[in-house]
Image (cartoon, rainbow, N blue to C red; front, side, top):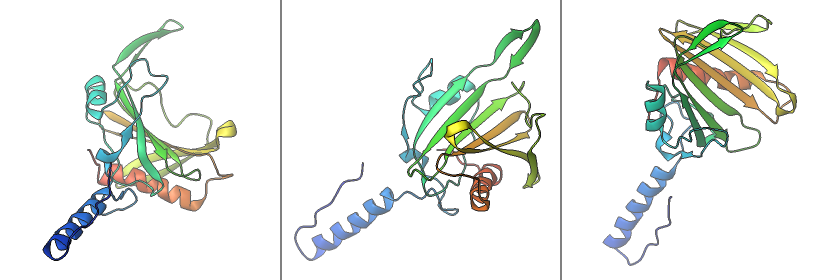
Length: 210
């Protein structure tokens, strides 16, 4: 937590304290919306997911359970960040209507907004075999190419929870899903889509990790 430095004395001492204050302020500045500075993931507060069977409080623990290194975005909107929850699961095998299904391990990070008009961002990453196929057959999927990577996105309304833009792509043996939800908006504007694509592009072109 950033504190307050009180300058005392004059001359050289005042100059030293002033320099210390500049360093502290710079360290406390959140730069999530900057393309150049990246995201200060080490400054995020990790809260426990209430519904989680096995609470996870560190990124290292999430990656240990999931078994792979998580790809973080190097860009977030200025009004998103500061708190996140973590989830992970190992590969599982289930039987549905007599059909054997195998699901690969996965990891999930949910990033909370700092303002009511900002989006929640949930990033899910999974190794093969994938548990589902996106886009689904209901239509409404828009395809885009981001840095030679095919990305499928679908916008929808989730009841009273607002507008959601769900995007997904596959790189090698890994599937990526970005779920962006605005709770204080009647529709997804062009600017909202642009911000969403900046997050996705940063994961493909310049991925980050704490």
